Length: 187
Image (cartoon, rainbow, N blue to C red; front, side):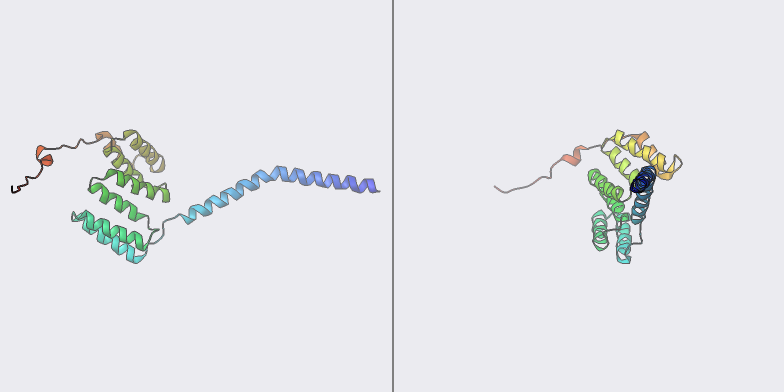
């Protein structure tokens, strides 16, 4: 009789082992899917703090008026009020590009893309800043990402494709731009 119970226990353990081996990979895949889905939900854009939104509006107005430093100050204040407001990084990048600071703009776009890798405006803007720095190959990578995310008809894709077609613009330096101001001194 003891032989029959140990034989039954062995069969039971073999069935448990088979069940575990059969369904464990599927259970792990479902768990991973749930974890990724919940983490993607956490990174979705949320409503900004109203104070930050008003500071961004103030910064946009200053940038439109050609006051880039005032715009940068407003955008940085908005970021201090609401550090999770990703759109501020796009505005800071636009302000940096208006000042000719392409490297700084690329860093702001990179920050926006770390928060949301599928941000079309950040991909396009970063691509344009890369072109201005002469990095056409990297800009083409951004174009490829945009085309895979939103297609060729997407406005951001079209803007970046046109910028790549133009290529980097040579900055013209005039003799007047490098002439030092005359200084009069007394002997």
